[in-house]
Image 1 (cartoon, helix red, strand yellow):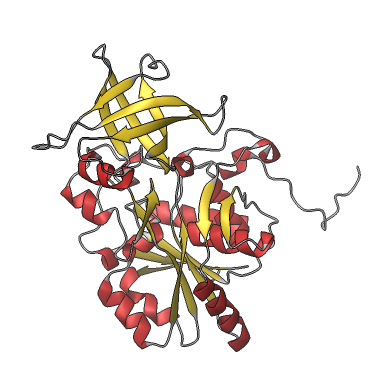
Image 2 (image 1 turned 90 degrees about the vertical axis):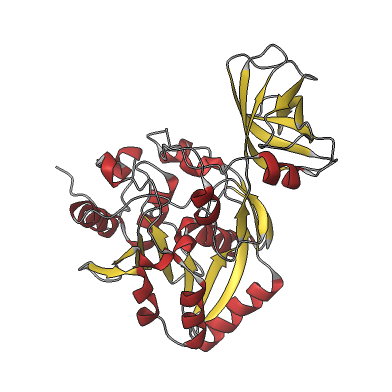
Length: 359
């Protein structure tokens, strides 16, 4: 028998990131207060159960917290073809000229050039509609390119805000409500373009942010428009064969300077959410402060910027499970998830959070 080389890095496969989750642990509604969620402190080998509002205890003056300020669009639109067939659109990206790129759910796809009537909000008579132009980003693309229009001449953002629905994740079983419109959005969201919330940041309220500021902790923002692909499980057992979805990001000049200043003073860069990690590390890897990223972070990845991470609990076999395993260690994440399931933490978008340190 040939002895294995302990220095040879382990090759991970998709099955390594699977786990059994009792369905009742999937949070269907947010906690009564944003900062009242539970927080699993996973910075050391022994997990500690805390409450999210305890977070300032673990921060210190000179740290830099980086938040994703994307705003979730009312990206789900319902409609009806001329034949009477029902249709659902999920707008993934707003393009130029009132055009959008969208997922389409329909029994039989309309012809290119066809216009479908969108279901208006109650009391609205501005006749919203969508005209199919073709696939996107090319003829083989998975998305469809539409022109959105109404009698008021609204741009797509305004039209969606009026007639669209909150694009709740597929594992949330209720229709969107006023509670979702308020809580499936961060308190500092300002740049519309996401179809999913940066969920770790949902735990922050104004009072907690003020407390963090008072400690001398610096705050900065990036933008990454979270796409629907964030909910899609990886499907290839060989991770190298996975085609990562694309998301647009931006690291403003002010945030670039805040990162440099933090490093110069020896502070910690704390990413709020995996989307902030993806943005910062995309910038660090490519030198491009804005653009589209397909970064796929798996164990073995060398992080250049992020020292600590606040994150929710992620779907089995998801790229985000791989990211947190790369960040905090595969075995450590496995132990934390086992603890969270035993202690009945709430999972996914409306669920609880954990605090991790880069291994």
